[in-house]
Image (tube, rainbow, N blue to C red; front, side, top):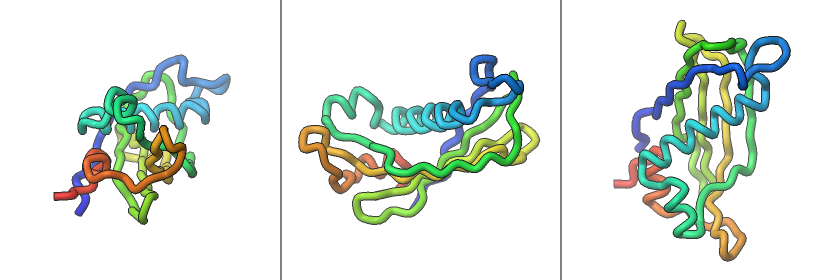
Length: 137
């Protein structure tokens, strides 16, 4: 069972822009990551926990689609939902939604859970899956 999507609202700022006056392609990844950190932190699996446990998420693959431009001072909502869960790997799907409801970008992130001491992927613990939106109860 999957929990409702997590929503993260952010305003596009000048430092996000390229010379054309719209969001630079690399900044999309930064904004998506900001949203992911926000929801895992709110769900009890933030940086302190990851550093303490010496285990946490690593990105293995990223696919981003750019559909509509984002411009300066525009507000967007980044919607994050858990996708396929297969053994040690999971997918997190994210979308950037403009205030008019149109999708500006879609991204899919394949994530593994890494034991930093062993330097290898391990099966994700239930509380990590719960933090990502999978209802483990």
